[in-house]
Length: 631
Image (cartoon, rainbow, N blue to C red; front, top):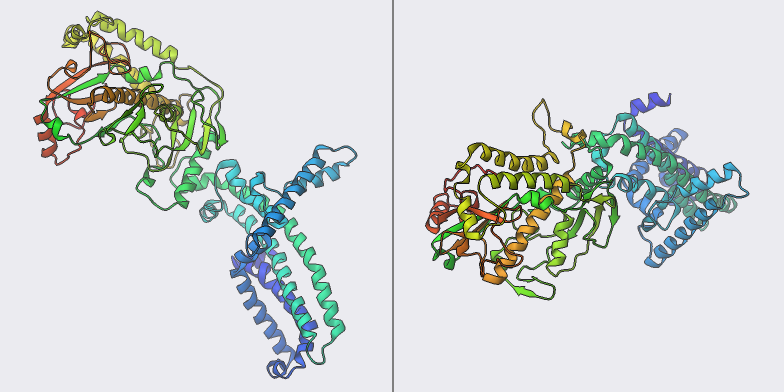
């Protein structure tokens, strides 16, 4: 019969059982015990129903009306009992201390099980389970803690904030799980409504004592009995949260995947990655939209794609000279410490540059107008002519974001303090990519040597040897391209995207289940490569006063009076600037990418009405296309 009634009432079942029924019970007590004393007054006598049927109708209508009102007010009613509303600060703090001490006392009893039966130990564990796992979440009342424990479950386990995403989760979770949660909450609602109703009727009973002809003994007994029952209903509400907590836990566990599917996301197989995903979803749902909000799900480390308008002084020069870092990403992988084991989540960590991981930190305070360029040496620079080292587009960060360890370490290197908000770090780590790098480096150097480009050449000889090297042996040139493609493709495999095969948005793709799915390693390599390049740019700017005009991945363009890199690179007696750009064939050193005229650059930008068009993309041959060789 209960199931039939639920089917007929649909969503109104929770309203009827949770609020209307206990209100009807409280009104019945009022009509039977308090109303007779009030009825003897002239004002009440005039409006009192004249028959039993009219009285029953009045009771029914009043129960429905007050039940609906209580249901609408359930949030503040709960918050009062939880200790969040109308509690003075001193009372709130005192209640939290008392509840924290009670939790510690129960925990102490659990750790000392001697002399207790299994049933007693189970009851202690049951009491402990009615507290949130995090002591910082302790509420000042037992009901507040009993509710808070399952409110924090989704966030504590998966970083899925059920307080923020409850409506979305309820819509996506299986029907049976939703019904269980609704039914479980109805039980708690019943006792809460009964408790408040008893309090109101008890107050009215005491007030009725002042009326003429009041049945004082009945009113006193009623008021005392109701006041005695209030703590019972409160405890019953606390106990009833056990089923509510289990139902919410089931909704979170079973509803995460449907929720991810409904949001067009893929639920990661690794728990750490899933926690990161839900944290981003929660943040996007809770915060006001900003221009940077649409990048919240973007990779947090990418290569440079930055350009700026030329200054008047640069426009007076004749040439734009591009230099390119050899095997830049392979060099970035050399000696890089990456995670070998699972990540560990840490709240408010102290930054450790030796620990690979992802750090949520605000780097917006790093000012490139004054940076450290040595142990005790500071340099004043024109920050408007430099890209930020922390973003691919070179924009200065506007708030907290996720960065790999090399990026955060560089902020410290520039002379600024960092205070991470949280992090996912990998304590089990090592130089996993060294063997891969060394094989590719040796193959690259050996092939280039066969093409007449050696590692120990003087700068002028090196530039001459690089001129037209591919034409000397086209087959060996193909080998060089294959080595570079192996570097680029190998890093791409670490975060491979869907490749057709009938894939649809919201579905997992095959790369996610492969052992090569390691976006954290890819991010670390890109981070280190970008930082290595920025470090050289800063050294060069501090020594020469020259600033880059455009950067694309590992290619940097400068304005110069001559067409050669030697016309702007500060070589002295054949030696380069320490820590700056150095010409050579080894990975991490630079070669000449191409030279165009300043007039060409200005004409191209004017033709496309793009004063910040990235000229590094076209510096090689001057042909304006959308393609990038990636070298």
